[in-house]
Amino acid sequence: MSSVQSDFLRIVACGSVDDGKSTLIGRLLFEAGRVPDDERAALVRASAVHGTRGAEVDYALLLDGLEAEREQGITIDVAWRHLQTPHRRFLIADCPGHAQYTRNMATGASVADVAIVLVDATKGLLPQTFRHTAIASLFGVRHVLLAVNKMDCAGYDRAVFDGIADAYRTHAARLGIEDVVAIPLAAATGENVTAPSPNFPWYDGPDVLQHLEAVEIMCRVPALPARLPVQMLLRGADGERWLAGTLASGTLAVGDAVRVEPAGVVTAIAALTVAGVETHAARAGDAIAVRLADEVDAGRGDVLTHAAAPLAASDQFAADVLWFDEAPLLPGRRYQLKLGTRQVGARISELKHKRDPESLQPLAARHLGPNDIGEVTLSLDAVVAFAPFAESPALGGFILVDPLSRATVGCGMIRHGLRRADNLHWQALDVDRATRAALKGQQPRCVWFTGLSGAGKSTIANLVERGLLARGCHTYLLDGDNVRHGLNRDLGFTDEDRVENLRRVAEVAKLMTEAGLIVLVSFISPFRAERAAARALFADGDFLEVFVDTPLAEAERRDVKGLYAKARRGDLPNFTGIDSAYEVPERPDMVLDTMAEPPERLAERVVDRLLD
Image 1 (cartoon, rainbow, N blue to C red):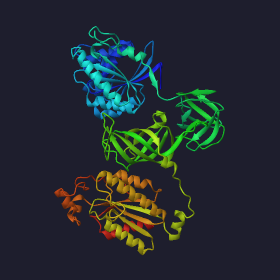
Image 2 (image 1 turned 90 degrees about the vertical axis):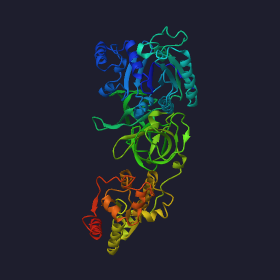
Image 3 (image 1 turned 180 degrees about the vertical axis):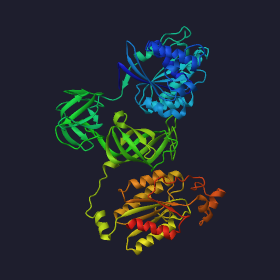
């Protein structure tokens, strides 16, 4: 590894609540002369209304721009501020300290060269200090400025400072962070922020600004070849195709031989523009568009690389994930993965372990909760081009999106592709689904009955199968209890096991439709996400979600198997409707109201729908 003196430094400021991050960055901006006169005047007015320092200026308000932040005196969103001095340009991310806003801290860390970790000298190292350091380490940050703040409140005691600095360096070294520079300061009064303070006669190191202007950034990887994630397809005046995006690394020039990944098609650059102006070459960071010499299939989500430096491609990865959402990460559940400009369906096929938030040591776990870090195996619906995050954050960093709510639920970093993915290939078969369906004279379907235990799913599904059989149809009924006697006998009733239970059944149902059958699936299937994942396996029109609508009170009254009584006594934990939620379908294909019609009539309605 080598170190370089870059003229542009990206910084993430983090730490625990009320350690003084916003005050430090605000003071740094103010004293460096980077706050315009009108903003200085606005700061004085805001300090009078929202300030926490009486008649004095509250520099934190330069960063806490949201009304809620000013009212509560906390940081919620990431505040990005530019700073330029005669020696360097900076982009500073002031990140919130509260645990519920950890995702925002990850946003800042993902692009940072240096982390400023704030510690309140009167409180010492706190859990959130360790958590933020672990996240910074995970994202590859290897330079830390440990700002031991509020030393004025600690009597400028050198022993307090040394104790915090020594303990932090020991911890950081275990996470692979060797470059830690500790600076004692009092941000509220500006001591050791942009100039030395006489109150620290025992400290002869740099102030904060001096260190930031001088720090050399460790270069962890050699210069990378050209890699252009394609963001969009443009049409020229004559209809020619241009592939546009931001050049993530390397250089591209007219005439260069390139590969379109993951397809591996080789062509050449016929023309190139930078910011809309035609030119001969482009470098990393440029917004460019290229016209290829050949008509090849390329578009958003593909990556152009130098022909001599192809990218790896896979549909299975080992990755680290930082989880954001209140709903846990569950192995087997489907998400949308966004990697570079590519979006593809993904499933967490395995949670290898959770990581201790302070030490990153592995811990046994079956799910991840909010702010948890874990190592997972990902299975994607399609092959994508990628690079390990340590090599290229642009092509190795991803986010996970809930396919139903569209909320971002996690972010992650690819460690490496899995070799087993390279050894699996689809085998071409002469007899296909259409041939099997034609032989049986029917349209294969999956009919998915969902509802509470005791709602009548199995009764109605059984009647539907009898009705279809009487009309000469070829069917199979997958019943929840029956399947758990064999294929899924190793699974319990935790949320994690329910997800896997339904994943297996959905895959079996898909295979049966490939055989030309009409498959009836009778499972409680309490989670919308898993029902949506099952639907996603089938072509439009081949999946029918049937909600067997029975009120909980009626299902409990029936209680044919005595399960509700056991659940009420506490003898049957995780029972749907009692201590485990049932998520009612929002847009089912059919609703069967068991309180309005008998099972026989409801079954006839399903048969009629299938044979229309």
